[in-house]
Length: 78
Image (cartoon, rainbow, N blue to C red):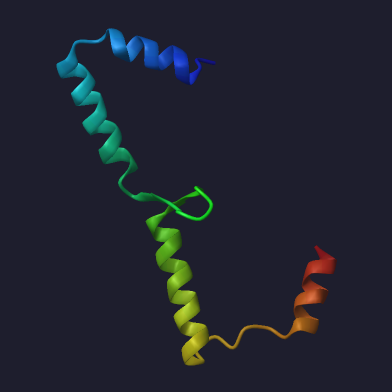
């Protein structure tokens, strides 16, 4: 498999116009992802939205969550 540095070396050999075209293509393909500041993990905007919705559902009572004993059972069975 090609390494990051091998790809970078090849990209640097490309004409500058093609480098910008590649840069813009990469930006477009990555715009649906975010890097978390605290951990530097990459997460999709969809996962962030789902997580925020789940939290709001919990706060408003739409989702009551599960009890700690049910959570322990679930974790120990898997």
